[in-house]
Length: 215
Image (cartoon, rainbow, N blue to C red; front, side, top):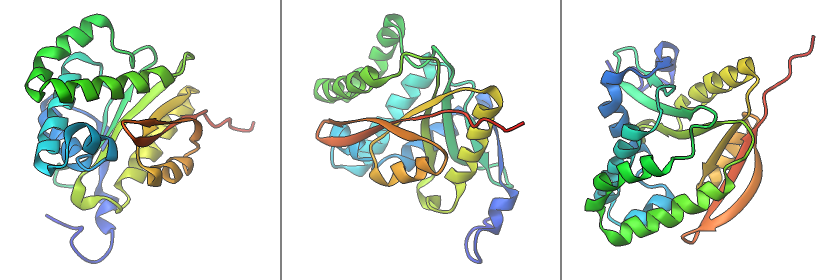
C-alpha cells in the first residue's frame, strides 16, 4: 500500500527503523545501488551509463557485505515491510579491511575490469588515509531508494543512528562526495575534519562527537 503517493508524508509515521535481517541483504543491496547510483564518485569510477553504474556499485556492495561486518546495519521499512532506506554502520576497529578481506574481495570485482578496479583502488586508498586513528563508528552507506529521496527517510535513520551513538558515548565518522550532504550531516552534529579531491570529485570527511547530557 503506497501511502506516500499523494497527500504529504503521513506514511512516515508508519515507517519502522530496525536491525537488518540476514534474509534482507539482497533487498538492501538493491536499495543501496538505486539510491547511490548517481553519486559523483560512482560516476567517476563506473562511468556515464546509469545502468552500468547501478550494476557495478551493487557488485561492489555485495562483495563488501560478504567480507565485512554489516550486522549493525539499520533499515527503514514501510508499513508493508518493504525496505526504503539503509543505514550502514561499522563498529570500532571494523572499518579498515585487512589484507585477507581485500583478497577475498578480488574475485567478485574482477568482472568490472582492470580500469574500473584501478579507479576503485585510488578511491578507497584516498578514503582510508583519512580514517581516524581514534575509536569511532563508521557511518555508511546511508542510502534512500531513489524515488523517495527528500521525503525524510534519511533524517529518520540519522536520528536513530545518532541516538545510539549518544547512548553509547561513541564518536562517529563518515565520508561524502555530495556537497548537499554536508549541510544535512551538520544538522546531526557532524563537522568537517578534512577535504580532498578524489578522481576529480570533491570529498568531505566528517566526525561527530556524542552529545553530553547535562545532569
